[in-house]
Structures are given as C-alpha cells and as structure tokens.
Length: 365
Image 1 (cartoon, rainbow, N blue to C red):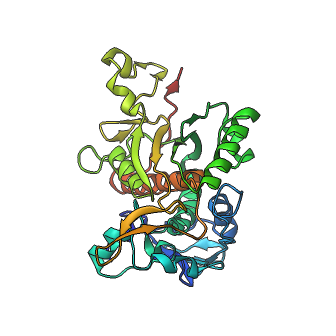
Image 2 (cartoon, helix red, strand yellow):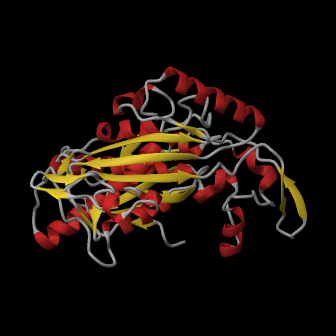
Image 3 (cartoon, rainbow, N blue to C red):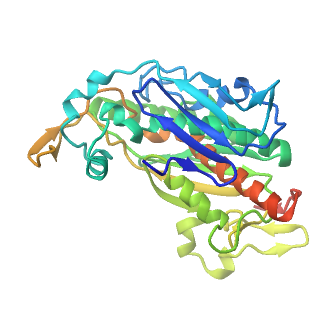
C-alpha cells in the first residue's frame, strides 16, 4: 500500500495496525543537533491517548514512545529517527461479527474493493490509532520550529454537535476533557451530559476543531502548486474523519464584501486576519488559523443496514470500544499535521532562500 509517507524534506512514514503488536513511524530529514529524548515526545502523546475520560474509547494504552534510532548523546544526528509505540490493550474478538460485513460510513467497503483483503480488527490500517505516531513525529517538529522561530501551536474544540463552544482563553484548554477554550462550567456540563446521552443511545456525533500556529516566518510556501494553504488543507484532510477544512475566514468569506474581507496593511502591520495567515500561497507572518470539521464516528452500537461480502443485506452492529466523538481527541492531531506542514515548508524555504526571521505583523485582530 502506497501513500504512507507525508512530507518532502521532513518526511514521516508510519507503520502498523490498530491491533498489531506495535505502531510507529520513521522520520527522515530532521536537522541534526536538536536535543531530543522521549520526554520531549511523550507529553504530546499523552494529550492524544485513549482512556483519558469517560467520553472517549476506554481502550487502555499508555502510548509509551521509544526512540530506536537517529539520536546520539541526546541530540539528533540527521539520520532517520524511528519511533515505536507498542499496542498493549487489543481486544480483537470484538470485531469478529463484522469480518464479513461493512460498517456504514467506514473504510471497510473501500479497503475490501481496492485490496481484496482487509484487517477488520479496529479498522486495521484505517484506524485513528495510527495518528499516535504522527503526533509523536510532530512533537519533534514543534520543538525544532520553536527553537528556530519561537513558533507555538494552540488548538481547541469550538463546536460539539449542535453545541457551540464560546472561546474565552487558551489557558482553559487543558482543564477539561474536550480541549474547550472556555472556563464556563455550564458549557462543560452541557457537553458532558450530551456525550453521556449519546453514549447510552449507541450513537455518535461530529465536532469542529480550531488550530493556530503563532510566530511564523513570512514567505513560507510556494506561489503555485505547493501553496502553503493548499498543503495545510491536504494535511488536514488526511486526518481520519475530517470532511471539511477552513483557513482564515473560510466559508464566511462567501458573505463578506471585498472591503470587509481584505486585511488592510498599515505601517504597524495587518489589521485583521481573514486570510488566515496566507496570501498567494505564502505565509504573511500572521497567525496561521485553521478549522476542521470532524464527521460522526462510523463504529456505533446502533444496528444499521448494510451488506456482506456476497452482497446480501445485513444489519451491522459494532461492538468494541470506540469514541462517540472522535473530535474530542482530534485537537492534538490537527496541531500535529499543521506542525508537519510548517517544518517541511520552513526547511524548503531555508534551502531556497536561506534563514528567515519572524516579524510581528499582527495588530488589532
């Protein structure tokens, strides 16, 4: 199966399956001399790992990362970095009843028709479990970008189903199980009750996730086929269950007039950021702002009509441990994909144009 590698200069190839012995990745192109240990990577994996609240899958995985290569005496050597995460809590018997059928909304049907064989255990290769090594690789990217430019990444859930989550402050994100940027206890309680009801009903729901990258050099990206925003959209659509991507004002720009949408320039910098930090495919130096739409989880307990491999009608009920809303754990994953795009473009920019400095063109946003 091709299509397992992301990035040109900072290249990440993932391997493994949801219920195999381990998952992991090989990172090629990481610059040498970056101080690196498992302690730099593990906190990001802990943010994403399952079993952290009653609202997500209760699969108990420590997601403990091992660095197998590419680091010597505490720094990267410039050679491939291999990360390994061992699977510890597989329960493959839960998937015995769907081995011959297809879950509606899942990749079962397309994998079967493309390859003639599929691993039904937790979705095999199509499982969101494979986002763990990506988050691990991105922890390295985040550290390098912060060291070079002071770049920081922030993300939050801004909508859970029909519940809009008002933004208050980034500091609230670690304080609740939803990565919500609000300290409003009533809003969190409503989300908690909503998820409890959904889980009891055997159903699922979608979510909206917002991510921001701050302190970005001007000029990252290419003006035609490798536009920065195009690569960001490509990366986000590569995340499991993502069905929509917005950069900056996104679909709101449909209703905006040119006098409203265009971000004026002053001697002090830009006023507004409807462009989301990208103009003409190149970074403006403003915050990169991205939103993604996550669809409802396909694996649910509610019986639904489908067919088996012979084309006969069946009713499919999915057992096992699944996230009623995969968006709850998607914030670290969206941050990760944005970081992988930005390090790749930063390295390409450095190769073409030399080192760059970060400006601060944000005003009155």
